[in-house]
Image (cartoon, one colour):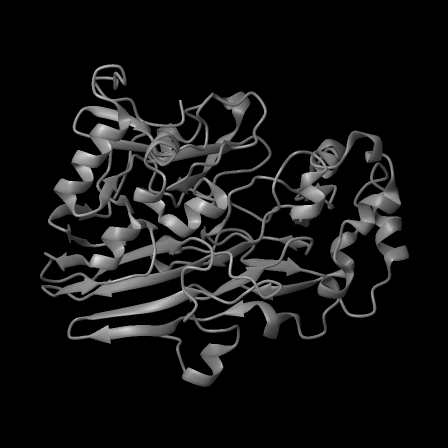
Length: 424
């Protein structure tokens, strides 16, 4: 299973998700504690920085692949073959009871995620994850909304932040190829796809690699190729799992054609021109690619003993799909943080409390263990203010939290770190 089991299963006939959730929200000031949600990938190699016990890296079975992702506040199902029924879904923990966040959102709607997001989407439309791989992964893209609609899916913009707490080592290749070198032609890319079964299709020869640095990040548009490197990555993104792999050989491992076309209409699976045209050409060959996608932290607010920084910000085609912040509370300090919308939170360092509830970053997690490092905060709770307290005398308390679409109109634009000197 993709979640830890507790001793008692929830009986919705007796108590009901909405009743349990409302009581817990009233008790905690708008917080729901979440269990770890582990996701395996059959075509990837775990990077071993998720704090998951090494004996549990293949807890789903060797045939399912290793666990190299942990999803946060997710109501999105993982698009894996042979998946478990709830794979990718976060579970709420209330005492000995549990239920999916998806079910809570369905029943409580605007009470959890806010009236505006509920009215427009009727769901929590985003999620975040830790992606942790030993080496690079294939040069790939995520379809936009129009393309994904052709196969009954949603498009997927995404973002990256490389938390220092999960990057004590860079693993095999801490560089990411993105887009194409300016001047690259569609004919060159078409040749790469046509040569799929002739050995390395050499698509990376048309691209450019960027050195990844902990404490920085990127904003990635749909239809833009990227081959993520081997840093452990915090990834706020749209609630979809669509992609197309355009590289056929990675570190000597074959990437099957099926992973190139899995989210394209079946009648187009051998149409190379269609496959190439899935890419947004202007964005892929942008000569100012880094200036238009690179992120460094920018201070949002700070006070005695704490600093709150934007780590994911900016818009894609003038629309704000998601944003994220990093809160650092110094030893012994306390602060009240008010936000404009609901969020998913993960604690990456330290020990403390959140609205009086335990909050700590574990050193090592067994597959079926519950933790006290992840919460979902309602919009009402966020607006009223959440109290963070660092109970350690020596170590900072550090939390990452991500928000839904159009929640933070005051968030900075891409390039703001240059003007404000926001990097730590």
